Image 1 (cartoon, one colour):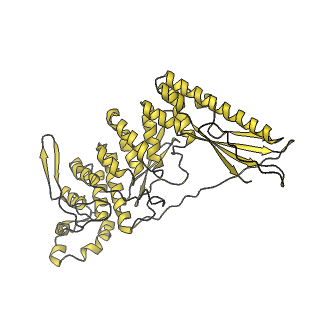
Image 2: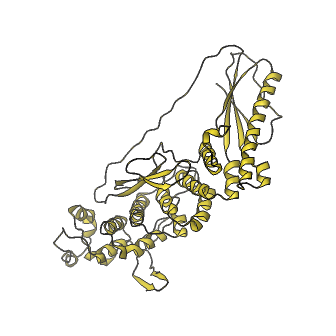
Image 3: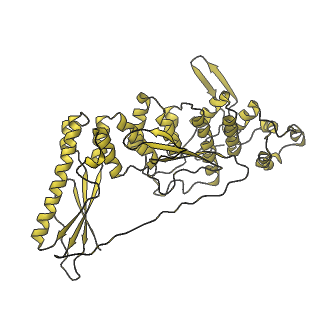
Length: 417
């Protein structure tokens, strides 16, 4: 039986070799007669498989141990991990971690290696907005598997992390940060270049890791893809009033689900807390916090882990070894021009643009001096400048036409206000 994404093949056997572990994988199925021998040590676990147990024969039910207060055996945990049933897989990963049973690591790694992405990055929808109930449960179970691997400090291969990245970015970011530099560098560059915008936390962590050991191709891309959004406020001559805007972002949480274990869910932030652990050092260190939940949490609204223009600028400052405040230009500058005539406005605007680009080239030169940019990139790679016109003049004034003589990498955008 095959699903659109996910995992959970049954694993009938593991054969050990001197050079590693060879896993023999059978076809996917969602139930196995071996579950007749499964028992759960706590009353909540009995509830979790009550529906499934109803399908077993009376003989099978008689095989369930009467004692519910003992820890599950390794064979039982192995059968849960190989069951193909998401809830049982989650319990198996939970108890493998609780008992620190490293003999089950091959099963955990195999489950992770068979993951198939659930996200539809090109659909234009928010991530995971169209997951079925089955797919959501598969992701919840995989989050439990990755929590066990993270907590037991188990290395995970690069190809496995590639498959997991679209659906479980924070977990992948933590595992990526633990890889040796020679392995994490190519994978971080791949994530930085190819991940969709929805995977913002993992893209940021990948860029932060690359900034610790920068490569010229990464620096050139990071610098050239800074999009500076400059606000040009046009006013009548004389004193003016102020204006502003505000927004908010709410968080929501779901109640615990019955029958599922509480497993570790990871959030990333540049804000350090008592319970946080360091993931990536650098100009803005990144920390991970682990909380318990019966369902996958993922990123929450309001996270500060995002590779925006200002974050790119701060990473560049870190690579230059200077404080971000010493960089002479900003990613969201603002200037006010008193409109006296169209010629006067155009001259003032061109002077603003010219000064901005002079500062970009100075930063590019500093990067080239440290061999972080090639000379060719230093001459051609600099941020794109977007001009947003906010015409604050009195009504019934002649609209300002679009300028046609702007320099390269400068875009004109008007916004009625």
